[in-house]
Image (cartoon, rainbow, N blue to C red; front, top):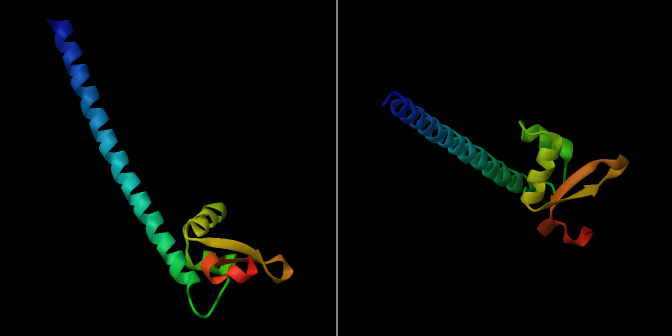
Length: 103
């Protein structure tokens, strides 16, 4: 009888731990996805500004803090941007739809 009780307690504990862990991870994933989606929208709005057809990576990075270099580049690509090379090998980014003549 004691063995059965021990097994039952261990099973319930494992089940509760698994459910709580799943719920915490799901919430974190939702938050991360929402952050990425909002950042992607911010990139699109930034690159649609009538003032600039292309923006330097440095300027984009200043305005969208919290992203590492390659992470930000992936975000730019997901937003529909492509990379160009400017004067002195400067890295520039612009939306495909606004830079079709330069492709």
